[in-house]
Length: 455
Image (cartoon, rainbow, N blue to C red; front, side):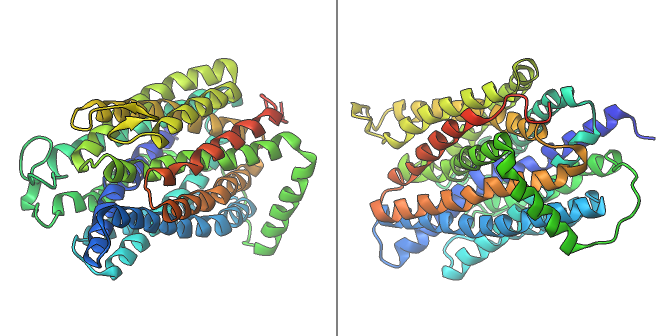
């Protein structure tokens, strides 16, 4: 018999195991590396440096748009099917395979390739990304089985803090032992990448894919050993009935003003945050001309602040509820985005800086710390707010809707960034749609009841 404490810790390990997909692949290692590879390709076909960077950012944006469309169409259906059968863990197993295969496949994304290499990169990244997102739906749906309702805020915050700690440690290992500087070929520790990896072929950086896959496989063991579903009578798979239940839930939103407002609000602000994560490292490479190791250090700083703030935010969530935590985090992120959009190496909104000095780098490091400090509590409190609008019996279906609400804007936000980047020819100005998404999310939060509709 697994104790309650073990079940909770096992559930925490999903966040620990899966966080490297966000930390290493999406934001700080593979995302910027993809921008480097794609920029090199576009330079090779005759574009100038700025145009090549803009095209690389747009390609990344369109790729993320396609991934998000898949999640948009399938997430609520899978959630409804899982609720109809009463089974969640089998889906975590299935999408864990997607995660591992997708992440491992990124090893073959080498520099200097043809256009097909970019397609390969987006395909395997998308496979793992979809696996992570779908697995998250089903692990979130297991939350109500872990403890009493009033403890969910603290459990959610601790889970995110533990996950960020895992991401932080994984990033440190990559920077010290594997990811090489494009200039020196050495890691942050000043050594060649381990295992004889070829720095010239960027094998140290490319190892981030297999590393993330192995990390996930190893650290999901406690989850699968300790997290068990409540025993329920086996139910046959009835897709028609599941979709009918989902349609009824969606139709019922017109009678649930607080839940509808929250889903609409989170649709915008969560995806604006995802856009920051998806394009932060790419922005640093394109606008500030950082290389992998600098971007990784930026990630370390953001991960530390996210970890600490998630723990603190969990306490604030438990004391004051999730709504004030969400609103405060959004406001801070809007301020940070205004700085980022108005920033170059020469100035911040007209305030001159010496481009050869460390001042532009320090400003962006501060922005990274603040994104982590706001992003961690925002995600944790959002999960708690969703729990306040559902029941254990409908948890998977509700979190399928929650994922759907995020993925509606998730395919819109990278699309907006890609289009804005194409239209302006500027990687910096291409980020500006994120500000509007945060503002809309903040306004819609006004109609959300602090304790949910089920209190």
